[in-house]
Length: 495
Image (cartoon, rainbow, N blue to C red; front, side, top):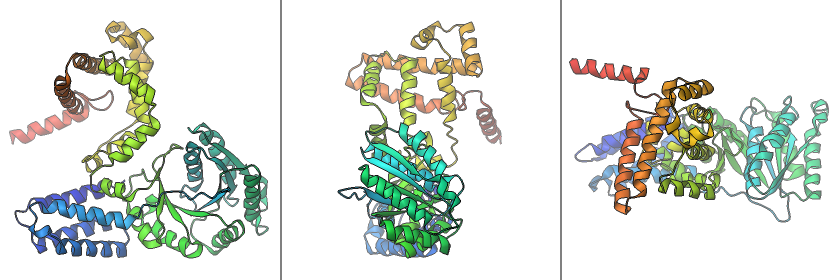
């Protein structure tokens, strides 16, 4: 998300930096570009107007015009205003003692509400909580069964010392629509069970509609009055832009929500909902869904999100992901083997698996400073890593430990087993051999020598992503894409 907006912002500030002298006219011209970028990102018109007016007012009232680096000051002002627009920070989940803390999730149909219930349960399980998830969506066919599968199949296998259970009454679906208060009764019984079995948290998955209507709001209002949830979270589909903001406003007016959860935040959307929903509803964004995995739910931090939008990256979140997903003992063991120059293909694939547990590659790369805007047109396909891992898994144990034993017949067997051309196997072996050689050289160097070698490895890595190399299946020397780029360059040179 935000790739297009990041690119437009960076282009605007680069233009500002390219001018010898900054005037009030230059600042206003830059803010016109910012305004246009925000509108194209589907940000609410009223929010855009107020945001741009505040930035312009502060820029003209500060020392920006006299500064030797006015573009940096402008970036700082825009960053601060983005934080204020999406903040303040309020990502904690209020817990009551004694429990259970009752959390009601509401939202339109199709926003990912049921999946978000499972993600929130997995989030709490990881923090040692005992959670009961109740299916109170009796209107949508098979919604109760879907939630049961999410809880029993996905959440049960999620990491953490807590416990998650499911409460569902699918037989009540037949009564829904024929009698009032059926969903309310399910919620009441779920609450009674949560109290008797001493659960810390009760999560209620309520019904949705294709649009906000009176029947939906009456049902949610009845559940709210009878059960009296401690937290009311509205699940908003980040892909729907202005429509999401409009529905959020209506829900908030009728239900007074305590927080927003933005789902499908990993999609290729323009980001308007994230920048508008807090200002329009007054309710803080609590969490964002960042992928399909049951653990892909993150606490929302406006200052980090503002950094991503402006291309500054989000290294703090990246480090937190690594700390949560990577096993410290295994990471230390691999680092020790690398320091001694003893890295094998087995170790290499273990590193890949640890990295992939942290999330999609493109998402992780977007957290690196200066990378976000460059990802807009970059095709980063995680399935290519499956091909690479498939090649390694097709090798024998001896071949993984020592790639030197791979002769022509062995290579052909590995390629057939992985379903790839032999050239991809050879490329992997060659690139891994170069990396292995470099780590062995580093093992015998002092501190200064290692720093120099690291620079050489970085340069080699940059070359591997260009025409001369690349991971198997990701476009390398001789690939169709590389040839077309080279031929185009030659034609332009001849002209």
